[in-house]
Amino acid sequence: MRAIVQDRYGAPGTVLTLREIDKPVPKEGEVLVRVAAASVHRGDCFLVQGKPFLMRMMTGLLRPKPGIPGFDIAGRVEAIGTGVSDFAAGDEVFGSCEGVFGACAEFVCAQASKLVGKPAGVSFEQAAAVPTSGLAALHGLREAGRLEPEQKVLINGASGGVGSLAVQIAKVLGAEVTGVCSTRNVEMVRSIGADHVVDYTTEDFTNSDRRYDLILDNVENRSLKEVRRALVPRGTLVLNSGSGAAGLRLLIRLIKPMLLAPFVRQRLVRYLSVPKKGDLDYLAELLESGRLTSAIDRTYPLEEVPAAMDHLCAGHARGKVVIAVEDGQTD
Image (cartoon, rainbow, N blue to C red):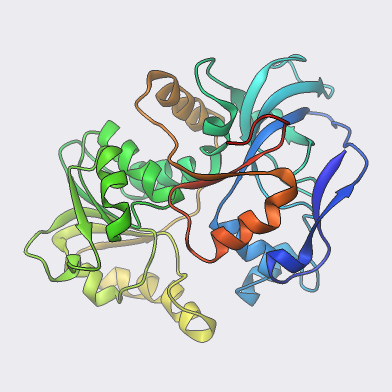
């Protein structure tokens, strides 16, 4: 099968290559999926580049453990491993995979527990764009943020992969939503349901008179003090990045909120989004009902994954970057 393979860390254009490799075989509890579409997100940039260096404690010190980038897939079940009863060959599914065989390949193996049925009216590209970013948005708002109906919520980075889904999920959960983005993305963020849009090139949300019950910060490009200024006295700040710094400054940025949290009235939260089948089912229901849609920036064929990753890692993506693996799936 064809796959994008990575043997070392570095710039996507230099370390990612298209190769022919053996098709994986599903183990117990796994499903072999013929991939129709995949998607990549900012976390894949860290994996490919090996930065920040601390990430290598989990991904491999000298070389990346996953040899194929990407986690999010949509496609058709090709075969099932022992112990799998939820799926059969031919079923259309979406979800996430992990391990040596990543998403940017013609076939992948995934745990059955990390897949759900794809709604019939949703394209493979739309479905592939949802799993990791959609779950991060849902968990950031509902679990970490404890979002309640009618609360005022601000999404910083509202035009990104997580942010564009978070705007919609927050609306489904009954919030009044403000999205922060650049000028070129204002109309897109408004079109996906934001009640208010702040163009950060002309307005500073941290210096406004508006206060929010919950801020989901996907960018972290402002100081903790500045962002807290935009919260109500007992509001919640959910931090979902750390990418606004590097080296020691990054470590300080990651740790500082946790050290400060016990001494302030506002809740300062970092969180880890752990995939749960029930939550993925919930996102599938939102997709099927039309209450959630994927804002897709660009779609690339499999052989152009290096270019797709360059585009994503440069911070230019608006919404999700999707990989069309099957012939005829490209825009």
